[in-house]
Image (cartoon, rainbow, N blue to C red; front, side, top):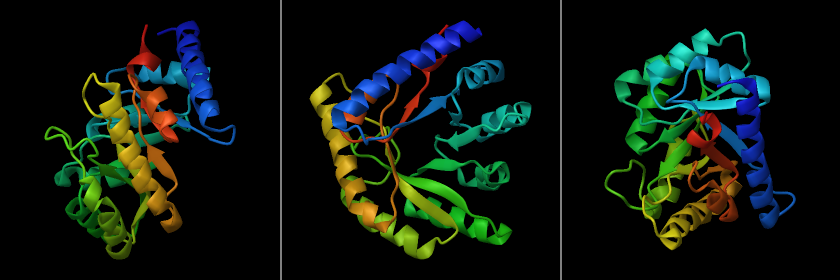
Length: 226
């Protein structure tokens, strides 16, 4: 990807995000995370030069490789994939700005135990399976608030900053919208407990997610297209 293409892609997304957020409120701020899992370190660097600052990876090894290769750039790295327990220490070593995929109380407690052993803290989001799909990870919506509170109480080194979901994997926009609205309702309940981020929306549905209250989106193919 050349600089001209990167700038065009980023400008297009920013224009669409601006339109969507302003329909919610002029005070509504949306953070864009560039999902680089299918892209090269060079493409990440090119997009950084174009103005994109936060990027996400869904595999610990890929995050390690790209963050090391681009170490001279002050990139804000996010981990967005399903995390295996045997990879927790490796992820802690990389110290991402935000781990978006804490998908169970059990994972949170194991993560916290390893953080305590290293005297470290990491920011994280609780992943909610608001579409209740068997193929997706995350806590069920009806258990989300109680799970969030239990993590706050039992995992002091894992600093919860909000929630994340993946929209329903269907064509029906109404169903996708309902999955977003379900997560936003949970987020609103958690704001008094310090929740800051409601991470909803990817390349195919981020405008709908913003309309439902998302303040963080994760875009890959539309940002990295040639």
